[in-house]
Image (spheres, each protein chain N blue to C red):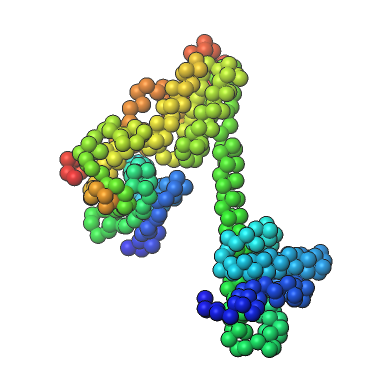
Length: 146
Length: 299
């Protein structure tokens, strides 16, 4: 509870510079919540991928961070939202190697593997919202839930 | 903006303000010279402050003539923009916040307003009100122009520093005959990776290097874009006939790369810069051996 002040934030994602802020904030927030170095790095990398998706594919948006406390471990929830064109084929977007830009096509699927909970809510023409949660010091849940 | 019908007699209120500014330019500039904005910027002589004030008054008169009192992009402001930005910058350097600079500019309004009121003793109450409104709007626009230039000055500074950082943060170091290394530090975005690639390829040619080491110890996050940049740099180095080794992959980064699903199988990697150097030296046929076998290693 006492850590909530440094964790909760709503950051704009409008340029490459904002991605730097997103990464720094997620790293700080995760450190405050007691994430190990590996967990921090994984979550920051996932945040970097998702924020870049928001910027490149969603045309910009924002990231909200929120501490999830009260359970057996501290968690950090990140919500990336944009008002872009949305993801027409989510299944394909999540598959490795598929890209609609000129990247490696590992961003969305890779980010899912780096976090413990992952949810995409996308409506074509309205926007996309990706919510991820990671927990400090807990083994990842089995994959397959979306 | 109030409606003004009696245009035929004196022109619009804005134009009348413009005429007034021309008529009383000297006095306005004299009074402004005593205000903090001018007084603290032009410290050498008061005359200098008065001259600067006159130029600003003339610019304001021009803007008023064209009825653009509300438009910060009015052509009249172009001539004084640089001077205003210098004044704003001088105040900022003295430790004043943007809000304080804004107040400084605001303090220029009352002296002009008093002069204007003194100048219109015979005008109707409506006319006086219209003219003071036009003047108020004009001075508000001046304030906006000053703040705008101050902010764009800050933006330009940030941009310059960013470019400086690009240059500074990517030195190519010759480690040995035929071996060059780039220690990467900070965020590896597209612009920086471009600079890294260029300077590395140049160094490969200049030094006739057979091995190029990219050390990513100082890169905090390796996501798919960074990995893509690394792979492109490695591929380009290979085309130049040199072998590229990526070193400084920390345990947390290694785990993240695996979870992310990135395949760096085509890239030669080593845990530390020392390992990469040892590998390159070995490949060049110059192995490092301890001078006193057994003795040096005991501590």
